[in-house]
Image (cartoon, rainbow, N blue to C red; front, side, top):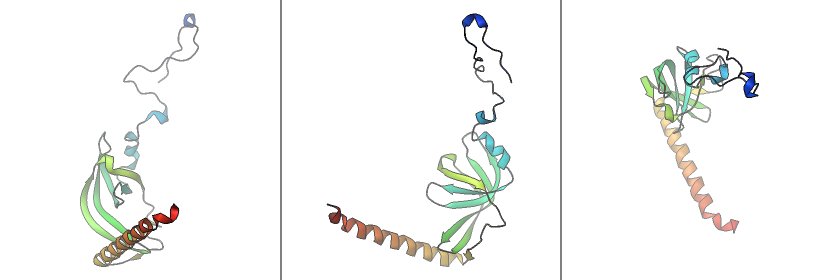
Amino acid sequence: LRYSRVPRHTGSRWPRSPPTGVMSNDPWSLSAVASLVEELDKKLLVMLRDGSKILGTLRSFDQFANIVLENAFERIIVGSSFSDIPLGLYIVRGENVVLMGEVDESIETEGLVMVDNDEIKRAREAEKAAEKLKDTMLSRMDFLDE
């Protein structure tokens, strides 16, 4: 849509603002949620606030960026190992989404080795325990900073 210029008698040469409720043709004015239309029926990777990575086919979304993924699974990666835990039809609340993007299936698991779900869960727990130990050690060494 194009808007006429403000009448010259006001002294302004700038176009008027669009009326309330009317969208302009400016592609940058589309909301982030509206841009999800282009991602429908594509395989997406969704990273959540808790750090989990969910992959699935985007089937639906609403004005709050809540999304519905079909054939979804959680991908757990520890080191160079990974495992996919099936979730099925999965609904994600929009406020939990940190990052979302299309998956390039040709390089999706490049450099990674698929392992059993139980094995990856044990590796993840070991990784968490090691991180906790590291944090404990660093907190005990705080006196060195003084």
